[in-house]
Image (cartoon, rainbow, N blue to C red):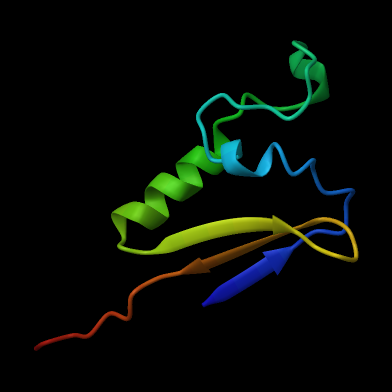
Length: 78
C-alpha cells in the first residue's frame, strides 16, 4: 500500500466520487488558466487498474487530500 497527501484545502465531499472521471474539474471555471483539463487523475486510475491495483481518495482531517493505492506484488517465476 502506498499513500500520499497534500496540505491544501481538500474538496467538497460531493466531488470525491467524481475525481477519477475524465474531464471532471472541481472548479466551475471554464478557463484553462486556473487549472488542468481533468485528465490527470483518470490517467493515474487507468494505469493502476491496468496493473491490477486499486486507488482511493479522501479528505484528510488536517486538510488536503490523501490518495491510497495498492499494486499487486510481482513474483518472478523464472
